[in-house]
Length: 303
Image (cartoon, rainbow, N blue to C red; front, side, top):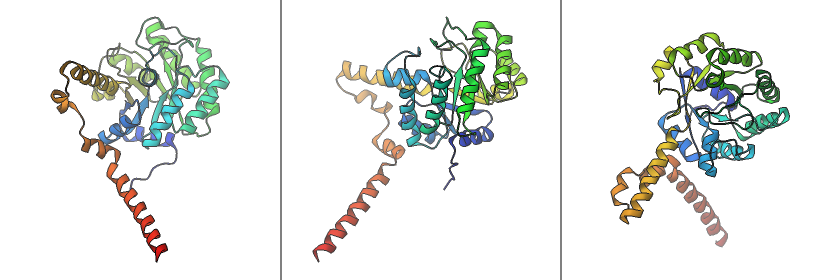
């Protein structure tokens, strides 16, 4: 049996050491986390958009709150030991709110979080109209986060959206300052070329993450291309969710239009495949064992 490290943050750091670059895949619920585990990923992710879109049917505009995210963290970490990186947006407030976020994330089982340097009324990192706080305010956020962690292995990642707002050099300057303030890793959002990632990797002494969200500003580079550019983590925040949603809509439309699911059966996960992911038969076997013990006990009492 594989030994599970006690610290979720430790497991994330171990995964980073084992895979270069580390692929981190978005999981919007516990079952999708099990699917990611079955596919062989070493680390998983919850995005703010994933929580807002899938759990609440809302856009990613900072509408969901800390407790909403913690509930999804608990569900996912209750189903798998894969280390979970979590989008903490801007931390839901000032220094004490950020401290609470870190502590609640750790208690809920997260391995790390990323904080960003947008204003509180944040926007998707690949949409126009983003506005940044001063670098000094973001540094305060990072210091509040690092001061609050009770597990030193818990990862504090700083995301900068400066590239799209202030340009590449400003993004690099901010990232350097964020590392000096204590950030363990850097999330360089919405870069557009491999050369820009090379500049980040060369200038920043901590691991750099590339966000390969679909239909955004960053081209869908391969892991080999990003590895050659010095990127250490590659994030796919909503890839599976987008595919699930398209597939679900296809089934709903087919049922409505054709009055039967026969033509889409081939696109569905089978009952046997579902049970394999869940370990269903082991649960049944455990019930049989418990009931057998109960029945043996009752038989003994009647003698």
